[in-house]
Image (cartoon, rainbow, N blue to C red):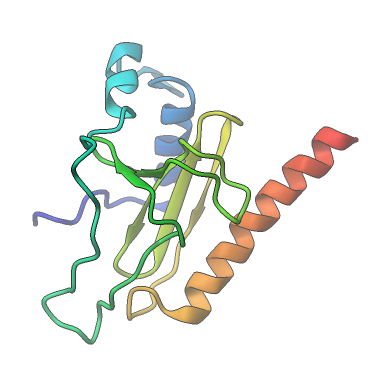
Length: 150
């Protein structure tokens, strides 16, 4: 079905994230050319274009939701990013996406790591699940800062 994007296990999502962090190289070898990765992560919007929130067809499982509370969003070929640092610690230029059942992942090529939050909870943007995801991402960046300081 169109619109599903990725459909995979948690382990497969982690391989996907690792491939983007490694400029297209996966565990079994090269998956994408480095040039393809560079083109794929480039902002696809022009200066006059903007990202807007769209309502779902059925309002009960899908609520209007912004994954990060920053309006300066960019779109690349298949991911979503921001031009400013996020409150979680995610830097400008990092990439990510979200799925209907409150699944979220991010890819931080600058710092060399990413993460995946997987639930099966509706509606999309559920405050408890989304808040826990934000706490998870914030904790990941705090741990990275603590490790760098040690």
